[in-house]
Length: 145
Image (tube, rainbow, N blue to C red; front, side, top):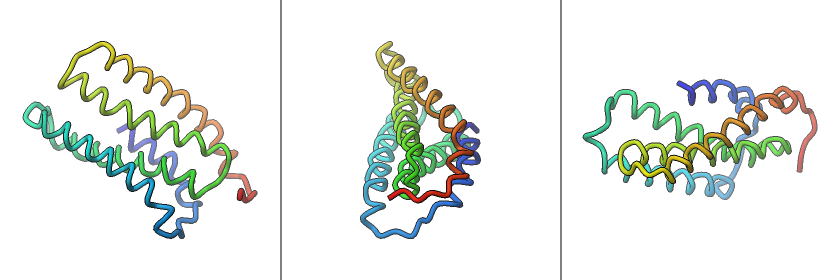
């Protein structure tokens, strides 16, 4: 639910951004998303029978991957300086989700929990900062390089 809410809040920026691009601009986000997808796939295979509800897990996984993709492609296409926070938001989501998954289902070590909580803390800080500045970003008429 939270990921769908984040996608809803960033949608005006997605609509404003020019996605006319060539393959070289998309290769890095696709490779990162492919790496994250591989990590999640391996984690799913390890604990598939322990997942509590498949009907909730798989749509949530797709929403998470879409969110991470948008967080990595938006700063590359909309060059507003405040969009750098999306890199931190997507990166901290990409760290927080697997580490919490590992802590919950595979290895209940406190270091894994602390890594997940620190990335969640950074996610919250950068998300709130970005949502506060989102109106300024959307109203900006300047073109950046």
